[in-house]
Length: 317
Image (cartoon, rainbow, N blue to C red; front, side, top):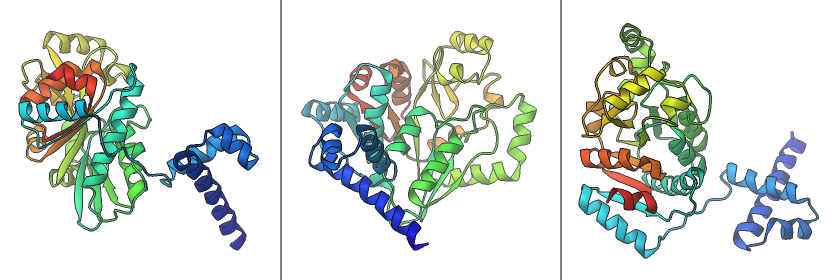
């Protein structure tokens, strides 16, 4: 046992050493490899392990002045109580997600009280998954995380269950996941799911959330509705006819800000929209393709706070 503990401690020491040299002293991976007599691949793995384990925790505490101006304008125009705008450092979607995810993690970190018991309703999708990935490990055993939507069939980090599990691992808190699909095959199936005790318990916990943290989804080609085959091609065409542009926890919103009706709404396994509106809702959003969706959601008055990239912020002002 002592040998195992020593081995683990030694591994952590190497990860901390590599992280310190890279993030504090500013050495490149090649320079660290030369100094420590390691391969560059080994150094890369050590640095990544240090980040994954939460051994490295850093946030940029300030943003450029033009971002501060955008924050003030967004808060005034849309009645937000908080807003963080971060520089858009890349042109592709993944770059935007990475940047806004770090800022979203910083925002969530500030809301996680170390001693005050809290229940947080958590959305799903790529953006929220990356926020959780960027969150450092921290002890928050008094926090309960509850999914507010049903699961996707495809297993990936953006699945609601995986998001909640990742938060539990990072914080030592408790969690609930909805043991049902996001979209049932029929209204009768959806009603059956909602009568299940495990589903009812999760939705009951979500209804008591102190606040909700969500992503803003767009609807149509290349949206998660399309990529993960949550609806048929005919249903996507129907969304277009109904001018559906945004998705909030599975609830569809049209271009006028109205809640979508129709067949999908009757099959949706998600927190009730009225319940969602009854608590502070904070959104993390990046990617210029979501401009119309974000603008509609902002106009609805649903959001209390927003974390967003500067290029997207400019498009909704």
